[in-house]
Picture 1 (cartoon, rainbow, N blue to C red):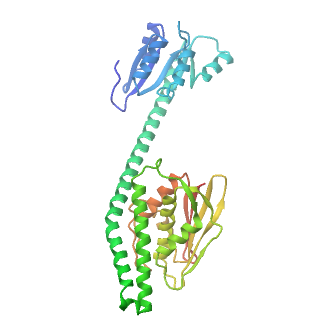
Picture 2 (picture 1 turned 90 degrees about the vertical axis):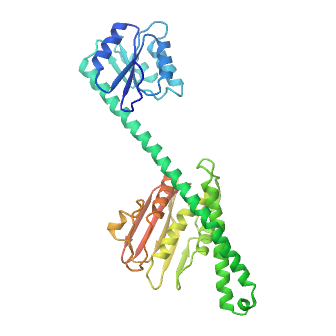
Length: 369
């Protein structure tokens, strides 16, 4: 029977040197949504396994001439294209433990003893069928996630590219203004112009970094030594702190090998939000290292704002979920924290929030060492 293109089809490879056994197995297991390919020897089984990429299960007889089932299983395990296949050994040989163990050592995931019990055979195959489709759904989910990530990276690239020119223009104009006599003679005006120039210049550098990041895949992106304390200070300089802001950055933030741009994106997002949504007349911002274990650093960003309601805490990390900050009048786009969550989980870490109206909000996130 030919391999079907239908993704809902469960393809079973039957291997036995006796034609009557192949017919009997197909008769026992036949039902809608299943198809079968048959091999009467070990060599034929290996060829079919390489030809058909969507085999869900191999029912493999142990006692065959020339190449027995154990050797077939061993060959399937050695080939990258077939090593994922689930194998059930079908055998009439001794039930003794040594024979069963040998089958498992060669890659079998289950064992059926001849003469076959029809109900047990059907039940076991049904279990493997469910596992196969669960694995297919998982693979499809991973592919869809990768597609979304590529689309988001493309979106970031386009936005960054469009921002680069106007921001560079602002920096250039601010630099020109600093050289004008009317600005030089006004200390406050000169200071403000200098702030505009420095912020625009740093933002231009960040946009260039994002553009560089967007052009590269995760595997291509450079891992470099990052001083987290210096990184956070650089980010803070780019942000406009509100008057009277008390800022504390833990000097014990680590220096380690990681992807700088990704860590920078996470810190910048959290710090920007902590400043933007804080309605306290005396804002306070704390950045530090909460804990460290063999795999991860756990960083935190803490503010003393009005906090985030419990209802909103369950929504803020979802894509395009927005909240309205009644105290500051600021609203979110529903993108930033979702991207942040993706970046953290990409490292294998987790992000969590602790918040209440009296003490503000603290975001904790794990970052792989």
